[in-house]
Image (cartoon, rainbow, N blue to C red; front, top):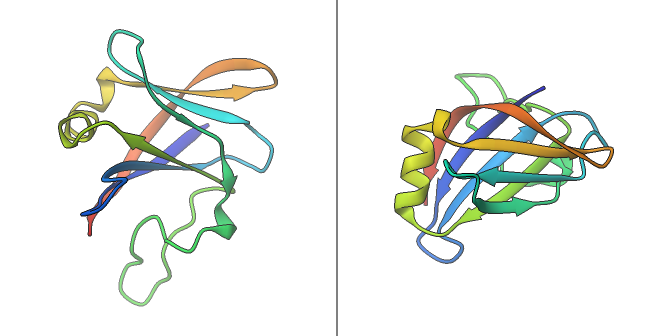
Length: 116
């Protein structure tokens, strides 16, 4: 499974977020983002993508925004620097999903970034 990600920088709290979307309903029950040394940076539980009002990425001319999967997880990061590092060096970070009681590493791809 590949998760699709979007970074989002807000003016108000929570300021620095990464949204992950992908998978099928009930595929995983939790997602965590780990740093280079295996330190937990953020974790969250998925919600159905269809319940989210904010679209992951804008649609192209004349097309609706894409939906990358049935589940979405929004993680808040500690700082703008941490968010920038994840965007710039995604290969240094690991995303794992909890599936049937086991943590599994999964690949992720950044699709877009947005600022408020």
